[in-house]
Image 1 (cartoon, rainbow, N blue to C red):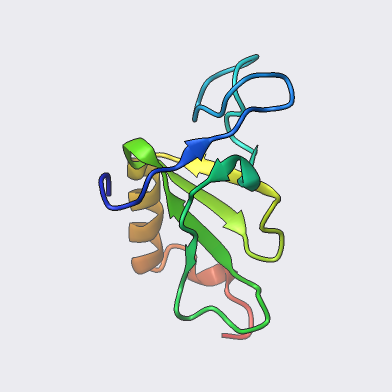
Image 2 (spheres, rainbow, N blue to C red):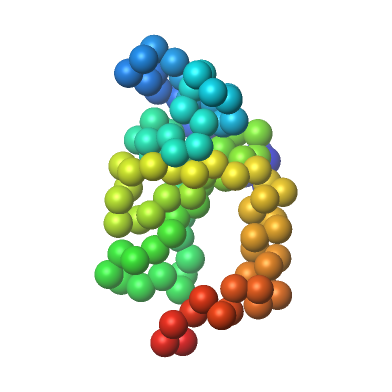
Length: 105
């Protein structure tokens, strides 16, 4: 996944830190970073998404990590996952591991 996305600039946090995925306790944002702190992120969603905005959006980050956010709350928190974590999730979805969570489908 690395190398496909454009540059994503980190913006300063209110406490003077900078966003660094998995920076650990006390430094940076880690998971739950405000999506607005990921300036330059190119968010995308599935073509299967519905027009009412009930979608999950993803953006590739430098180094291959992937940010995930709720499209209804674009400034809200983004969760950061490694390439391996996203690959495992996508493969699980393809394998039907989460089909029992579908309602009305």
